[in-house]
Image (tube, rainbow, N blue to C red; front, side, top):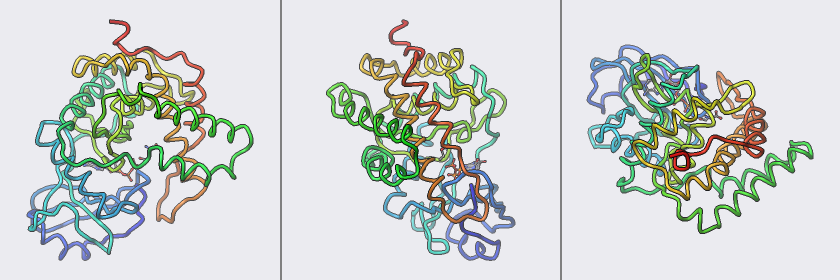
Length: 322
Ligand SMILES: Nc1ncnc2c1ncn2[C@@H]1O[C@H](COP(=O)(O)OP(=O)(O)OP(=O)(O)O)[C@@H](O)[C@H]1O
Ligand SMILES: N[C@@H](CCO)C(=O)O
């Protein structure tokens, strides 16, 4: 992440006493990511990740942290949040909400093969099933309402062709979401940002999903689409790689079979996933926040993906090929 808020070892000595992790001996800012301020911290009981939330408030955060606890307790590989002496998972640091979670082993697999995509697909299905009895419901904060608030902010920066594309896609997704077909899609808590940089691998073994701070309740097939749009593409062109796509979908399907309504909206959901990230990247690009280190993401990447998913074809869900 970009370090928006600075934290020194001195800042942490007192603050850390509320957690059962002993004393802190080192703190190191992490320079990837664009949403929060993240630090690796070393304590008497091991290594943890400290996150200071730059955009999320105290009222939204328990959903993410408790969801991670819920998933961890059901064997889904995710960072386990640490409670303080009062049982709180979120407490203030420099006036902002902050949390400590366990550090996952491994590193991101940025050049995935079908074998990695299969691991991701199977764990994603396991995560959807395990989250389905999670009691807190919080909507996806990057869904329709956000879309409608954000589009007018970025439109003035776009040329006529891009304005047309953006408005037409929003119209298409709004119409789909109003349909009975859409309402029949299975849903529940989803990750909603499961990109290559949010999963750890040790060789071919998946060691965890992380960065749940865009999670929310949405359709499961939207989550699959967001994941496929990143894990199963050629990064240059945005085109889907058939072997990786089928590996991910088949592995998911073997844990939680896709339904017929999901197969009917599959291509539309790939478009919805592309729209979501094109729009957030446009917003971040034209309205950047202050940061000590900032790595902007290219909006053009998701514009290309959106255009490709509109024209298709896309590999079908296993439901049809079975
Ligand atoms: N629990 C964890 N275990 C190990 N490493 C972690 C963990 N959480 C975060 N990291 C490391 O910190 C980096 C940034 O974290 P993260 O992706 O959550 O930041 P972010 O600002 O929310 O980023 P973005 O939203 O752009 O993906 C990751 O790429 C990873 O290297
Ligand atoms: N995954 C997002 C960044 C926010 O996590 C993107 O690539 O635009």
